[in-house]
Amino acid sequence: MAARAPFRWSRRSIVAVLMVASAGLSAACSGGEESSGPPLTGPAAEGQQLFKSNGCAACHSVDGSKGVGPTMQGLAGSQVALEDGSTVTADDAYLRESILQPSAKRVAGYSAAMPARDLSPSEVDALVAYIDALR
Image (cartoon, rainbow, N blue to C red; front, side):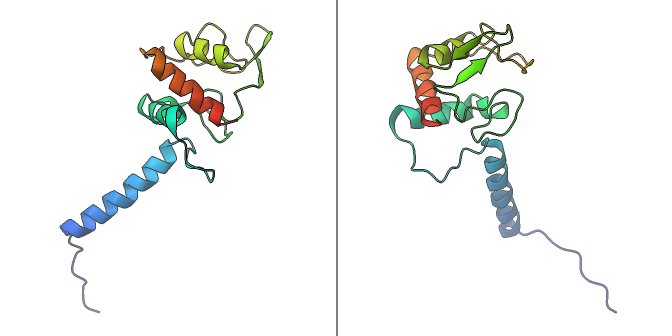
């Protein structure tokens, strides 16, 4: 049996592999953000981009799966059990406070400390709109 020539990477094969790897990594790191629902528009779409660009998806899923931090799916309007034993409604005020002062009201069962971000009021509003859209 004749020996096979070693595989030689062409520019086209390298680009193809990188495109496939990038698509898979993007889907894996999106926290399940690709959904079957209608595309987001306005502030919610801006919030989705901020969620990705600020690294929120690294700890918070949007599809209900468990992560380092609580999932964002169904969070808005729900009752949230806090570390101190109290419960709070995840209304827009709570969401804003949690984004701006992550340690103010820690969710029960999550010990990791969320880093504070330097966000403008409109960016916080957009993130809240995105979380609201994940009901």
